[in-house]
Length: 455
Image (cartoon, rainbow, N blue to C red; front, side, top):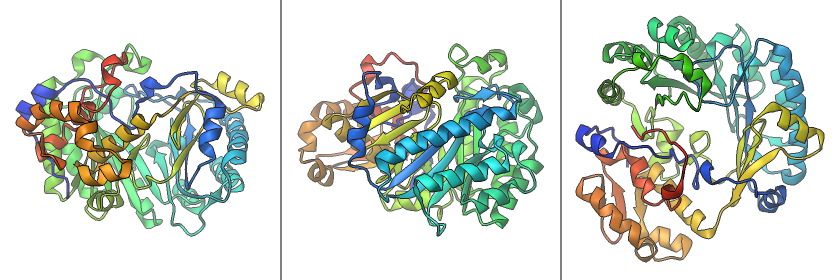
């Protein structure tokens, strides 16, 4: 069933509250330092096909809205020891995992991966190929996050040469006043030029990231940005809500809260964006994501095979995710494992010959059941009790009786339709899918973390 973007302001006002984004369940709030490398090794013994994530934390300049783990520096030499450390980390991971499993998915994120020079890019991919079984027939989903300001004339050709076939481009907003306020000056010509070159070089998917709620944004200004973007037809679009949390993220302290759009303006922007994209033929995947109907994400959702992980929506649910570099989070079997978050600790662990895992979690059977259920709802917007019950050998109505009872209010409000055989998220409910998933999160009431608002 294709997703449709439906905007009900009364429902949004009633349900707009902080909540997890469910890139994992349980969320990272539940990770703890009692998790050990032995726990990780035990899970690795049951590994399947692989997905690899590399965190490149360096940025030449800081974008004030950023909440990522990054290191601002003009010193390009800092990337060299980091790459050597990641090579040693790969070697340690390969001893545990590399039994010929194909790497079906690979992603470089950050930070700014294009902070690396071309030879470093070639070297890192070459070392990855030495440690793991990369696919040579261009059939893997190998993607990279791109900052167009860091792209030279031949950068994309180098990336294509070493195996990348998908990219995600950060744009956020095209209005000069907004760009200046968030310290990211990036012209339409530069951004769309990178998109066009990527297509000429055979990149199969180009995704574009936008943010609504930035300083000085208005309905008209963001509409102009969207019109320009839609004309270029990116395969996918992510439109994220800016969460202003300066007490947690220092760069955001450079943003004057008085310049942020009013809450109603943000809602108007979201409604306008969803309608424009739907009118332009995009499918609402869910959770800020839109895609053209022939994109892999849209097709996977239509076929009931969409998945969600720490990088967002994905089509490789069967893969174990290995993460390399500072702050990287992996998902292997019934575990999550997160690396240390600062460079000194990372280098120290590598020098000791230890995996730099700082914390993690071994999931219980109940965790696994709820993770699967939340994934079904957040990706497919439907839960069939019979098939889910067979998969886990449970009676869904009995196992989740308290949660189903709590959903009755959402049913009355029109967010879901349900009976004793299924739960179906309605079109208005899709925008509030985080709220629906929160009903099944047994950790939420005790969580002390501050989450972003669902809208």
